[in-house]
Length: 316
Ligand SMILES: [Zn+2]
Image 1 (cartoon, helix red, strand yellow):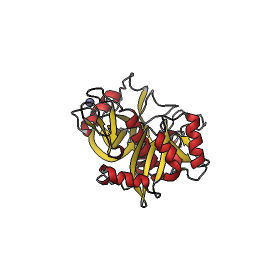
Image 2 (cartoon, rainbow, N blue to C red; image 1 turned 90 degrees about the horizontal axis):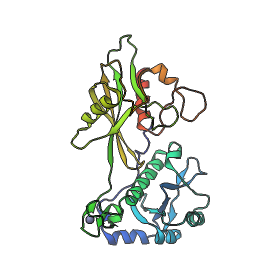
Image 3 (cartoon, rainbow, N blue to C red; image 1 turned 60 degrees about the horizontal axis):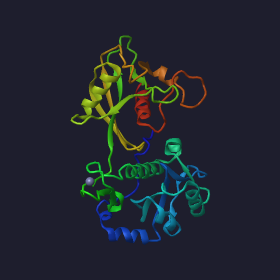
């Protein structure tokens, strides 16, 4: 199983993008391409199989660039510079008219809805562009003095116009963990899944939560499981990480084991938390398909799904 949003194919040129002259040359090059976004939606050629992000030649994107809220250098792809352009300040109909002329048949679509349909590289690129535009939109003012901020370094920094403080793209680390029952009394392996009231449908998923300041990742895993399910864990082991651009998290996936057989879930955080056997999880429905299942698996593009799939594979 692939882990979505982890296959970025761009060369980011973190050094070159700090040079305004170099950036100007990229924006003037007819090899460069523009990826428009609007209201957290990326522009896709949804009629292609699989769908692809629209890459508009720079000459056809002049009006978009001139009216964009932000233009962000993403990186180089096969010798071409790619820029994200946030068209949030342009009226919706006008924005659609502009992109339709430059990329006929393309549509603004929410990555949350089509993420699982994309190739790994396209999903990763769309996730990156979405996370960057969301960060700019939410950081127009300095958190220290309240004055407006201005984007610099190709959109990888914002500097406060008032106090000069430099602000960098923010990522919120969150731990997510699959907990196994150590030494189950009947010998049948089980893992812990919970029903979070914020999740749609009847999804049962691995527990997760944001890392607190002053906390290691392992401490965050143990605290979240204790707070949400009322059990202790041991043998905490890192598995994988995943950018999760809704809007700016980095999911850090772990495995852990627990000897506590009775979860005591916190009603304000979870509606339910239970040990499930592999056979029980294999009978879960896919979210959104109408098979009348009492339990549904988490989204196919999530690291929760990967952690569960890996555990199921191990059970044979
Ligand atoms: Zn400031």
